[in-house]
Image 1 (cartoon, rainbow, N blue to C red):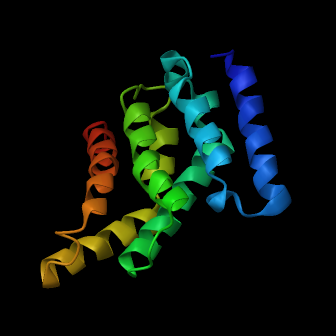
Image 2: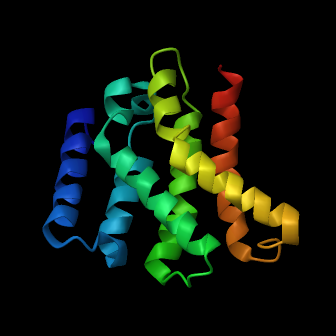
Length: 156
């Protein structure tokens, strides 16, 4: 665990690896490095707008959206993608434990993202129309994204 600036520099370093080879999604080491940097950060950082405004969180949200779209279209996720699909919502629920007046608008921008909400809506429509996903073990990964949305909704 380091200072907030050290952790943000770590985020920058990890994201630069992605920019260099553009295939981070298959690099389980880099994936775990991102998650561990966040999970083992000082919890008080999650209340700081400067911390959660870092582009790594947008990267993770967009990555999750991409994985959700793949999953909804029955694309078989590899181990690294499954790990990310399960872990990204865990990070968002952890962040949502620290909602404050200082960071609520940034969190809403991050999580109340139109494309993400539309994809989740399509997911619900498919459940309602044909029960799709109800037996899929990956459905558990959606629980925390819904909890994060619920916590933010309560702050409106």
